[in-house]
Figure 1 (cartoon, helix red, strand yellow):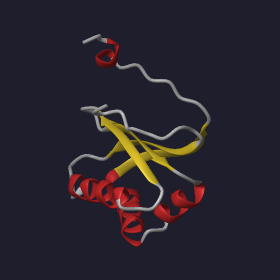
Figure 2 (cartoon, rainbow, N blue to C red; figure 1 turned 90 degrees about the vertical axis):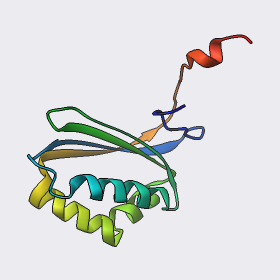
Figure 3 (spheres, one colour; figure 1 turned 135 degrees about the vertical axis):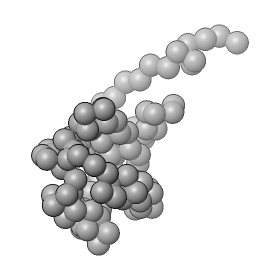
Amino acid sequence: MGFIAKTPEPPYYVVIFSSERTEGDNGYDAMGNKMEELAKEQPGFLGVESVRDVNGNGITVSFWESEEAIRNWKNHALHRIAQQKGRSEWYERYGLRVAKVEREAFFDREEQRSP
């Protein structure tokens, strides 16, 4: 599926993180890459989709098996450091939403083609 995370049948949970960046990198990209790799190792992690525009506005959607898995990730020691740096250096503002996915639908042009 490429960019679109492959998730199990619902229900599962999503964390939607919308943000507006400050100017400059200040270690942001390196930490972002580290956080994504670390998240993938966490029990209950299902996938991630993330985009950022040229103005620094971004949305990251991470998919989780349970609210407990989300809480554990929120409280992971290195993730806590990234959260603190986000507030002190990397973000002008951000919003965080957690939701339960009850249904989903996908389209894939490749799957529609007959061999």
